Length: 316
Ligand code: NDP
Image 1 (tube, rainbow, N blue to C red):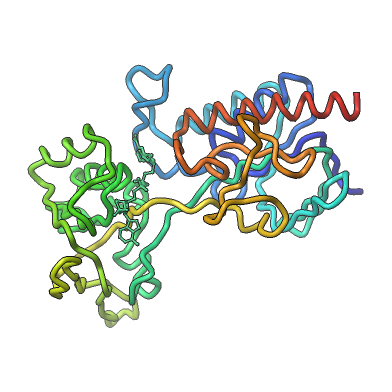
Image 2: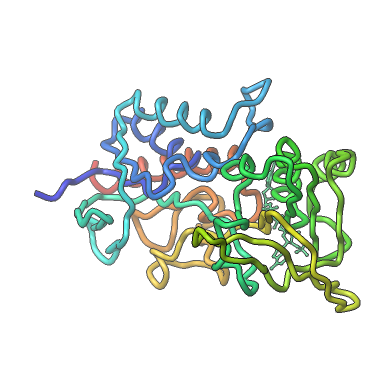
């Protein structure tokens, strides 16, 4: 028999678990589909210093574990599957997972978050995981006493670069402009770090590497281009971390729900309502502006309250 829930939450970051916490405390039958990255993006970050309530900071994975336990404490549960298709054309809504299981629900909360963007330069796919990474927390350890590069000029790039100095002998930040999007405090932290140097007006045109006798590939150098003069250079590189922002994980809903041009789900006014009745969106999947754990959590709370009131009005 198909499993039915009042609310199916798709995505398990701060938005999803906060929605689960509020909905389960409202005594609703709620389940969280944790997806391919249980706990979401914070599980691949280091220390979270800016989440209120944690005076001395907390490690991202630990924080998400606490989120999950707090939501489960009130009766919500997690299903460790990834939703691969949704039918929102009629109620109850139908979800199918990568285990080929089908679930139905009265309402859906979308909290699928976002994922790291890549450059798309030549060699990127070939050397991804063999010197190229999009997650310093995951892979920084492998670059002890080596020279690594970080691409980007935002807070993510600064955070990754700073973190990498724990392992690397030198970190070079490559940024395509001469102005930075990063917040002043994060930028200054990198500028004051003796292990970090900056190459501005620089972009990566190609990742170059070799295949070792063992058959494994290995990145060895980067072809860089000055974005002002177009001058090219090849520099040796042990590793490179791409930190140029994120893309919302909303492909599952493409053509089924209102989105903006870049794939962020559109919500109505200050609410979490989408254009489909009974479907609510929260977190980075619908927020291209703030994209913080705390704002995601706040919007997850809003989605649960909106869903609760909507369910009450529909089903009593
Ligand atoms: P941002 O969009 O802020 O920055 C992306 C950076 O990557 C920009 O410098 C951009 O360059 C560059 N970039 C984008 N595409 C390319 C490309 N194709 N080639 C080369 N460079 C490229 O994303 P972030 O992920 O850094 O930050 C997102 C949000 O998350 C921000 O609001 C940030 O404050 C927040 N954040 C906060 C943290 C914290 O407080 N601890 C940590 C990490 C993120 P350009 O400037 O030229 O467009």
